[in-house]
Amino acid sequence: MRYAFIRNYSGLWPIRWLCDLLEVHPSGYYAWRQQPKSRRQRADDRLTGLIKQFWLESGGVYGYRKIHEDLREYGERCSHNRVYRLMRLTGLKAQVGYRKPRHRGGAAHIVVPNRLQRRFATMAPDDAWVTDITHIRTHEGWLYLAVVVDLFSRKVVGWSMQSRITKELVLNALLMAV
Image 1 (tube, rainbow, N blue to C red):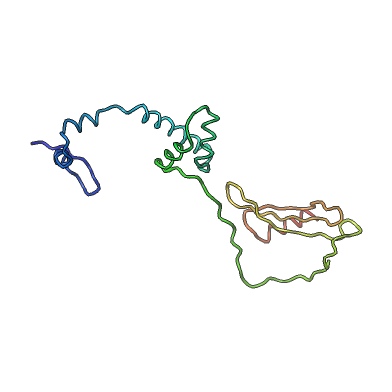
Image 2 (cartoon, helix red, strand yellow):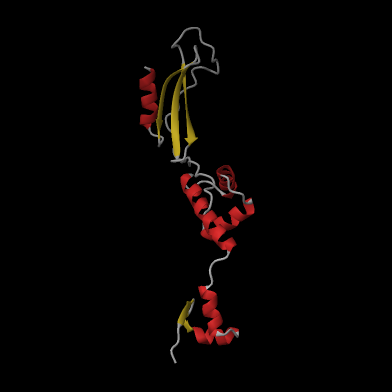
């Protein structure tokens, strides 16, 4: 007797043995295998293709809510639950959160004395400059911005942006201001 084999998690099983175990005739199994997909399955396959397309266009960032909005704008009529189910079945997930920059602790650097004593009103331009460094979240990662502001005019006189906090970041901002 010739057996057809089906793969399972622990190896290969003969189909006749599985059919006997499940009390199904082998011809019923083969008829089920040859059966065409249902209308719902075909619609799910088409919708899954659109979901993958919109998810890839978003750069893998969008979740089921925004994908559902895109599908509605595209003209598809489906619920957000269906989009959630199809995304879960295909393993598509939203990108949640970003890694925040970590501030390293260590020995304190040279501390400069406070010369302004919190008096930020000046009488002449270029009398006092203040600086600050901040971080900005982008799709590619974090960027660091160093800014030099003139206290008289409150205008930015120099700035620099880099992907890491280094002394060049601050020096480039100061050189632009000078």
